[in-house]
Image 1 (cartoon, helix red, strand yellow):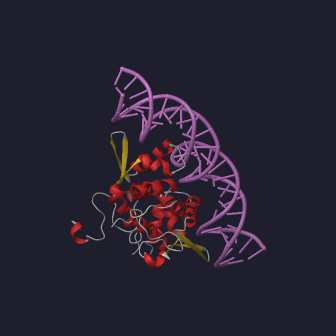
Image 2: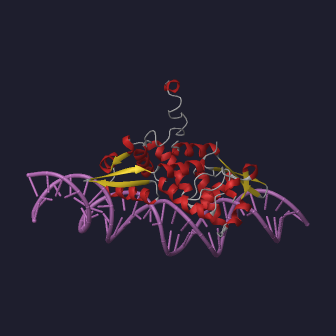
Image 3: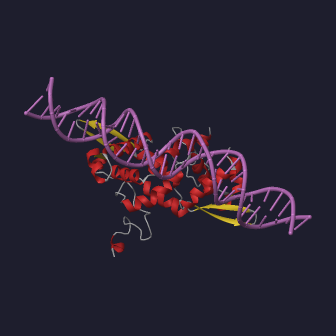
Length: 118
Length: 118
DNA sequence: CCGGTGATTTGACATCTGCCTAATTAGGCG
DNA sequence: CGCCTAATTAGGCAGATGTCAAATCACCGG
């Protein structure tokens, strides 16, 4: 019902996504949902992984192309990818021998909107 | 020199701020600078603190108004505020007995822009 | 069915985090 | 000055995190 009254500044029905930090205080529930996503981006390696995935040609990238970009062991990269997955920032799909990662742009957009100050 | 050629997609001189994750891979240096800011937002309490500060009336808020909003000790809130400060997300100023916190909107905007997918 | 390659899971370990209590610093006010 | 309140700093502790080596799982090719 409030949906029709304040379409631009209300919270989405399916989770926090649109109201900027700067316009309205985030409640504890939303904070609990969103903080893990920021936490996942709070490691330099994961931030780079995230950007490699998000900016990948064709919208996806193979783990085999991610791992050699860092001087870290395979398991460590795999662990970081799991963290991004559990934060809802990426999805993975196995096709044959290789596993491909893809960014969840809606989730990224929600985080961006939250920090928006414009 | 590339400055004149690609004014819209290049990196700023004074730090990473404008190029979305989704458009260009973040290099290790930028990742090292930006990850700590996301890390700071990666705790539910700090995310709420950040939004309380950023959305505060008059652009600033007293620690004495922040602390009672949580069921945590004063030192713990102070510790979280220090983390936000060291991440470059807020600044503080003492005026008499009280200390006031203020959001660094440029920093928030840089993070928002980085995650932008539009 | 077997061997090989890509990826994840497991187990271990050093470090970092978040929390508290106690102590300290900073600034009013009588 | 002496005391009170606001806030930060110091110290300590349980639990989470980042890393790697070793083991395991998934798929492909012979």
